[in-house]
Length: 141
Image 1 (cartoon, helix red, strand yellow):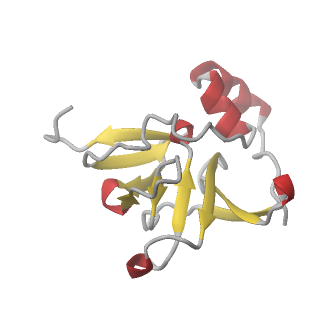
Image 2 (tube, one colour):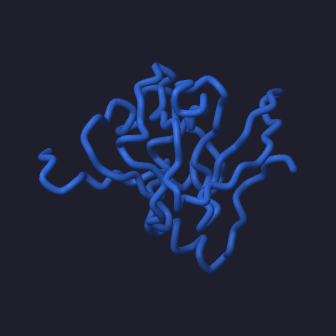
């Protein structure tokens, strides 16, 4: 199966257009990508959880995040309840694996095989615009 835009439900689409920023909509609903090193969570190192910006589903925790120098937030593992969907993506003349929210089908980013070996060797390359970071209580700002 090759990657396509996430499924659009006209009723939900109008809600997302109202609620999401232009960049968040472009990334999550049109399968876009933010420019490297521009995402607000690329260098985020405080404790907390990363949720889907569209539906609030828990995707990753800060313990799963690592600094990869790729220009986007990187995670070695998804949360056990994330249910992230994987789809073959052949756009841009490459073969990649796209990752989407298992709850609302929002485009999150891609997964690669160059992550930390001690965690299975995967690198989830995730757009900051596709997630909402919820700071761990007592972790400060």
